[in-house]
Image (cartoon, rainbow over all chains, first blue to last red; front, side, top):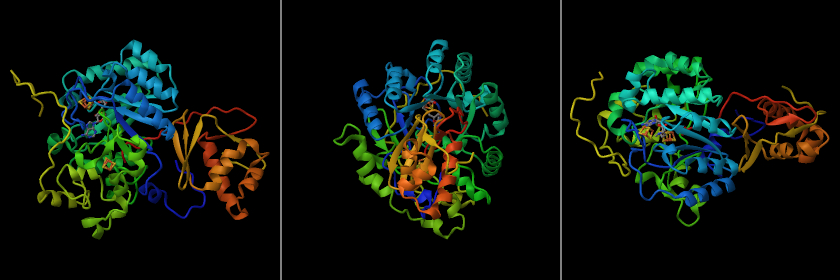
Length: 379
Length: 105
Ligand SMILES: C[S@@+](CC[C@H](N)C(=O)[O-])C[C@H]1O[C@@H](n2cnc3c(N)ncnc32)[C@H](O)[C@@H]1O
Ligand code: SF4
Ligand code: SF4
């Protein structure tokens, strides 16, 4: 919602120039995870020994309170694995920082659900990537669908209220859009659909998972028909498909309204660019998070007017803004050109002559075990 | 919902304002809505609503020019619809369904 009395500047221009504090701050509490999803943007699995401890995490919350960051999106890794998870959530809420956390559901039992239902300032997002076990488990691992559904049952039984079911769109689940909505309705949940980025382990799985061109069109129309669907404003590159824009912010918010604090305190421009090139500093540095947000070279640079590069001559640039920086970076495309999933087809052309894909600088995947028997039969 | 000059309103106590170069960001902890107040005078009006006799008084004190008042009334109506401001006499409870959800862009 935007309240707009006389103001000469467009809101997006003001946002591009940066705000005094982020609107959308993601905080990954740990790299530890019980799952090993093939697309995991943070390549999670193993805990990092340099993880912020409880006192350091509290200090981050104190700082967020001083900056008036109204809420944080907590993720990971699987955040609920941290022994001090509930303490930190309570600490944040007590300090005026609302919490939305994302989880695979593995720790949401009946007791936890009751406990969570007791707070008005906690919002939960359960992740599934298929509307049935076969589709979901092919991405998130054997048994993960059943676990997530069980968590939903517990939340519903505890009268938690409206939680969110978050789905990353892939070519295998786009046919299940209506089924996801039905599932959400069954639990009184809100459906949230977001865009798959080639980040983390997604670098290796993106080619097989990302939407085909005709599926992007299908999704665009499905979303236009259901403006109440949450999307994290992640599909703005689809706006070039028609005269109508999807609701939400139409810009890359990296370092402008968005940023990420990772488990060891490193601050990145957005959750989808865990790479040294987009690391602005560490909350343990002098001046802390505030200084990084307001003064770091990287964020200052991201707030300067960006060149449209190869997109400048395309009539759709206003609609799609050139798309997602992370998607370009991790597919080896120049940051000032088309998105790899550019709906006019410019991205595919660019991919044909893309540079090499930057190698990862943050990988916490568990060591790969050699499979003794064929484990994946999915087609 | 409409807001008129002769009505008394106040900022919902579940709402926090954060100053920004363009005015302020307002966040409603109850319905988790976020909105942008895109004029410094509007921020002042909203902050002072509770201590003024009515909206016209709040406009006077914040120095809102006559020509801008219709637009400001519209802005206040939008804030009222989102439960950011409430009529001062009656208690209302309207938990909105819309949620702030900008993950990244
Ligand atoms: C990284 S997880 C962390 C929290 C928790 N472990 C979970 O799965 O919800 C946060 C969300 O990002 C989604 N995600 C993972 N990899 C992604 C990718 N490459 N692109 C877009 N979203 C991704 C997950 O499905 C999940 O909904
Ligand atoms: S996306 Fe999967 S692997 Fe990554 S943190 Fe969430 S549950 Fe773990
Ligand atoms: S890099 Fe992509 S995911 Fe990150 S803020 Fe920009 S558009 Fe959103």
